[in-house]
Image (cartoon, rainbow, N blue to C red):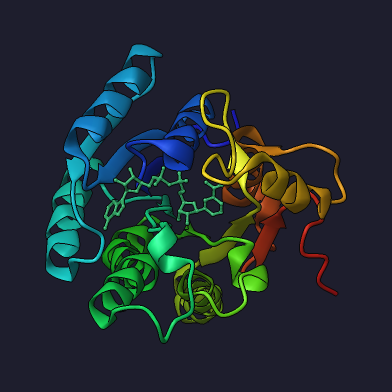
Amino acid sequence: MKLEGRCALVTGAATGIGEAYAHALAREGTTVVIADVDADGAQRVASDISEEGARAAWVEVDVADEVAVEAVVADLDATWGGFDVLVNNAGLYMDEYSGPCAALERSKWRRLIDVNLTGALNCASAVRPGMAQRGGGVIINQSSVGAYTAGTTAYGVSKRALNALTVCLAEEFAPDRIRVNGIAPSSMESDSRPALRWWPEERRREFFAQQLVDRVGHFDDLCNALVFLCSDDASFITAETLRVDGGLTRIL
Ligand SMILES: NC(=O)c1ccc[n+]([C@@H]2O[C@H](COP(=O)([O-])OP(=O)(O)OC[C@H]3O[C@@H](n4cnc5c(N)ncnc54)[C@H](O)[C@@H]3O)[C@@H](O)[C@H]2O)c1
């Protein structure tokens, strides 16, 4: 086990990639706290992980709510003695955010930025003192290839800004021995959820044809990247966003 004895907070882990991340960390020996607005889902994931023999807990919280995040993390710090790992995975991606920025209702724009960008900042700021007390830690921000390829979409802008935040926080938190990195997935699938399932088959094929690796990325590919970045194998890597995209973006 690469992360034995560590304690992780994973946001947006009531379903999807966050759920896969929570299981992957638990398999590597980490105690996992699932944080999500979806209380039922968070409770289900925590109980699934416990049934598999690992330690898990859950909390209902909106990452955009700075005061609530601080209160929840203060409680969790008191119970678990601080976190070694934070995964800022909670994020909004709906059709309404995949259009041009100027056309988006400002209330929706604010919500997108509040969750995808400020939410990560809220959680990082809240866990920092506990992490520092434990002698350091790792923060992972869940970005997207949309940060590089989605042109003027509001979603792309939110993830591009998150990449910038990753670099800023890496610098700010370095004195506390906290590494801050990102993961930028292509459109990924799980055994139960096809990637880009809302697109017509031809558009999906065109999208995946741009990748260099001839298959659709799986949640497992992301979990492998997560475990690596959280582990001591990555102790010299910070301020980096790792693209797990089968060569889709190809940035020099
Ligand atoms: N699915 C993909 O292929 C893909 C690709 C690139 C990037 N991403 C990014 O990965 C992350 C997870 O994607 P997913 O497809 O699993 O998403 P999802 O919509 O399936 O799950 C998101 C989870 O976050 C929770 N959440 C939403 N807003 C929240 C808030 N304000 N506070 C707390 N929890 C909140 C939801 O309740 C849900 O459980 C997102 O940041 C997304 O942008 C996903």
